[in-house]
Amino acid sequence: MITSRETTQPFITRDGSTIRELMHPARHGCQNQSLADAVVAPGKRTLLHKHSLSEEIYYILAGCGEVRLGDKCYPVKVGDSICIPPGIPHNIKNTGNEALIFLCCCSPAYSHDDTRLLDE
Image 1: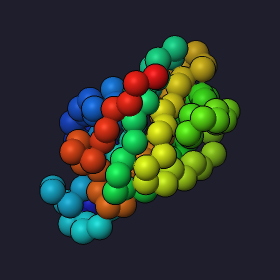
Image 2 (image 1 turned 45 degrees about the vertical axis):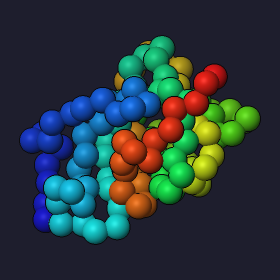
Image 3 (image 1 turned 120 degrees about the horizontal axis):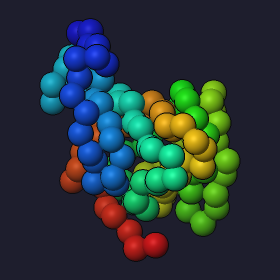
Image 4 (image 1 turned 120 degrees about the vertical axis):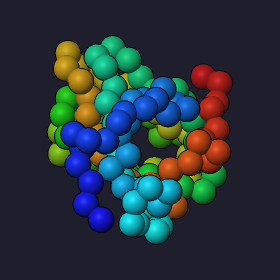
């Protein structure tokens, strides 16, 4: 299966990011993971959340920001990879003047039901 970003419709996830699911078991040929690109506008951030089952890997394609993992925050920039184990509270904030764009790989695949929003 081959997909194209240009023909994939974006939607908003429970954490507030806008994503395009490039590969997902519910719609594509993969079985155990999902791949999406996510966009966070300048000055915005995703809601603090965690996943009980999914491990996530983010790969920063454009922009810069700050990722929160548990109680610590880390600056991120183009070329950085972030591993987010299941159960770790996290969010990402755009600290720059352009869109923060990153790939998000989830295993098992992303599910709204596996996304628990947390109070900040």
